[in-house]
Image (cartoon, rainbow, N blue to C red):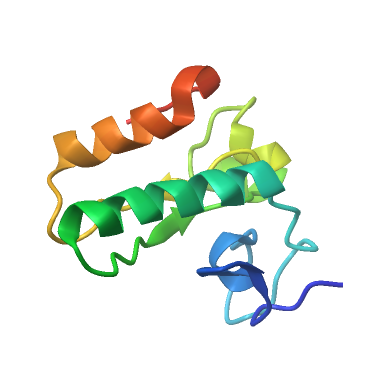
Length: 116
């Protein structure tokens, strides 16, 4: 079993990508499973941003895995990739503009799909 403070990649803790249903730390689901290829993609994007800035570039994960109930509550699409652990919503990191960040993400994702 994965716990909240367990790292799932070099810069990501499980608590950052698990489903955030429920309140006050009382979750309504098991948290779900984020796919390793998504974490690898995140690390590549983070590395590219760090290279661009010439310093470490933390990137905040706004949303990761979602259970069906949480997905409905946040207005997600019924076939959202968040439901199967193949999506992350990222906030644009400090020091990089939206268009540049989007371009970096697009380069790394390739044909895998990217939303705004």
